[in-house]
Amino acid sequence: MALAPNFFDRVYEVARLIPAGSVTSYGAIAKYLSAPRSARMVGWAMNNCKGREDVPAHRVVNRNGMLTGKFHFEGTNLMQQLLEAEGVEVKENQVVNFKEVFWDPSIELLEK
Image (cartoon, rainbow, N blue to C red; front, top):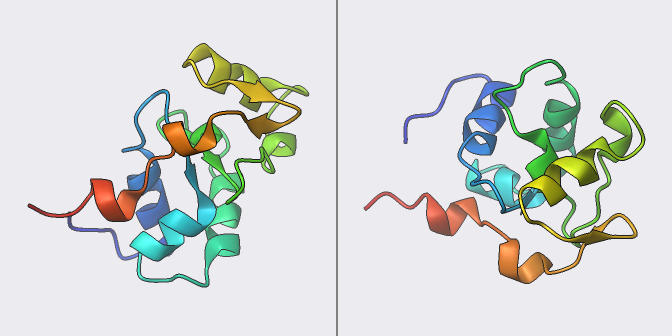
């Protein structure tokens, strides 16, 4: 997969590939982009994509499955509602079956 030169755009390209009903982490995206210490930068990219409905930012959570970005969505529970509409179970701001719904771009996007 050829990636855009801008880091935020590269993050958005990866996020667009996360299947509905799956989640990934900021760190997993950073690792895939060969920037393993840039999970926080991935978070900033997700926070910066407001109004871009083509980027499913609700599918990106922290490494423990916590909805740490939920405060950047309109309303108090929009991130959770979007995930639940896709079949992802969330309790107390955490993805319940995190390991089962985790999508790792470093594995899933290997060029074959």
